[in-house]
Image (cartoon, rainbow, N blue to C red; front, side):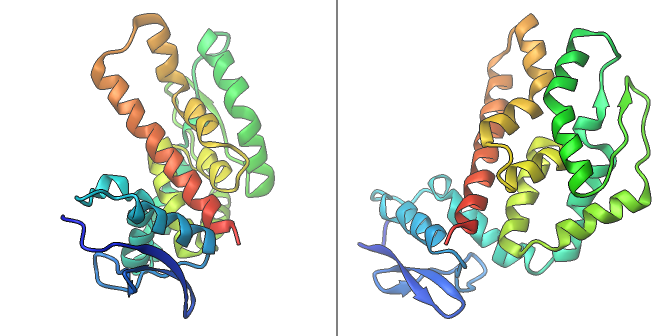
Length: 231
């Protein structure tokens, strides 16, 4: 799309802050007003638009896209999104470890257990298994995580959904969204097994591209959540 405006700027709006393109409010793909609670997030979204060149590129508007997702999709499908996120607690990455005494098991325990301990204390305990043996989480624990997820507002829920599906772990995603983990730490924890394999066998271009995409999405979720929390 060709650039159709000169100035993008944040502005106060009913219910929060919006972004004006030559004085006209920015709208989501579904034509809803794009309004966010945080001034910091509005400023960052406006900056995405202001740095566009002669052609507007969707890939360079990640904060805008995630805010639009929160407004157009999450707000309309909250129960479904909450259920999708909660389901990750049933098979959370950090609950599935390699066989004991192996090098990768040692790394997993070192990288994951502290976050699982934190989540268990803050929300509810999750059981851990080794090898290929599946583990069943208790209904009470799953319900506790569901209640915690459902308590988030739409913007935070959009960031949490992105983080959870990208990392493959609700525990790591919650730690990321709450600021306990930064993006690079969350990426390293989620990619631990793949990193271990790369150290031994190397990586091809496809694998590296996949990792770059994961790193970018995790960073986006973390930045969006932090901006949304800011004043």
